Image (cartoon, rainbow, N blue to C red; front, side, top):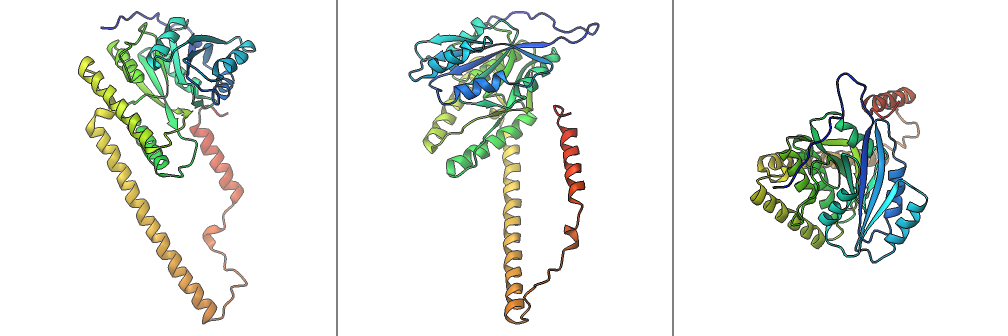
Length: 330
């Protein structure tokens, strides 16, 4: 079993809450097109209760200009440090290299081809003010609109993962956790799930932070989509068999519940589309009748009373609702 270690108590009811310090680890493998915007986004995070003590970029097996770009960025940003691995040995080995170098008890892991929202780190790490929480996951978001079948599959799966995580935390892409272990077994192919298992084994809980958003790019081909799902499922089964830990996506009842809700949403959408089509068709028939038979040109429009609303009032009300539901806005 994995060796664990005790954490110092960070909070006491008799003292003011301390600043939550964290280390951010970026796993980079041939990410020359995305690494600089990612690092800039991390440096420019909006932080209140949280402090980023260091950003450690693990440059693993890169054959492009990722190393050069990160070195240039780090030269002007003392917060950024570099760990280089000449050969790509997988995410697990890269995460272990980060764990050996980080200096805080709260770790944030992000892949080099993602982009965090400006409040992502704050909304992830601030949850560790509760000493019973051991791991928190961000909400995965796809920035691009689906233009092909694979894109639609990516969006559907991402939406279902979000709904599942609201019920049972499913943590991936961008995660934060307490450093209650020194390394992940190198045999692990699903590192986030393995971290979940280690955190739960230590008696800590998992949380999902839907207000901590991370933007990702989904698979572009059906073959890539299938390969990713196949590899993940294999890793989940191995984790369950060898260590007895079952991730949320292996809990059939919860998955079927989410699938049923998505199906019902699709049925309702189809009904609304048919209704819209029917109303549009009937309106065109009536319009043709007015034009061809009644010779009515509708030069003077009859305003629908439901449209006569105070637009400025509605806008102010909408802004007020957004401020009420967003704890980061003032």
